[in-house]
Length: 112
Image (cartoon, rainbow, N blue to C red):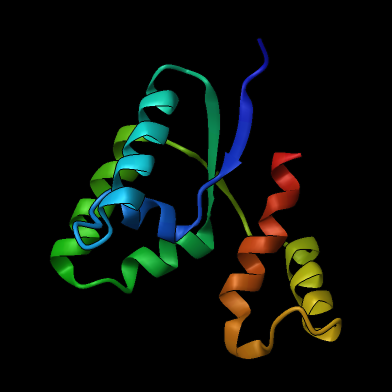
């Protein structure tokens, strides 16, 4: 059986600790159980790392521990990713105010 490829943006990692959203937390825990069972190959990007580094110290430490535990493949931002993000802005998907979100969308091309 072929593993599915999943790009996990920052919110997914945060949902592991979302005590205020128990349904999302439980769904995310189940997802990570599947990852541990080898059902999925996971990816993150430099954008995820930047967003985690922006978190307060305690939260950042928790998120870094999870990244280190699950060892996702790190995708580097390149010209193609930036080009796609720019195209999303031009097409009105989102504005530059949401550029990091557009980068996350652009990184999805690696999971096809």
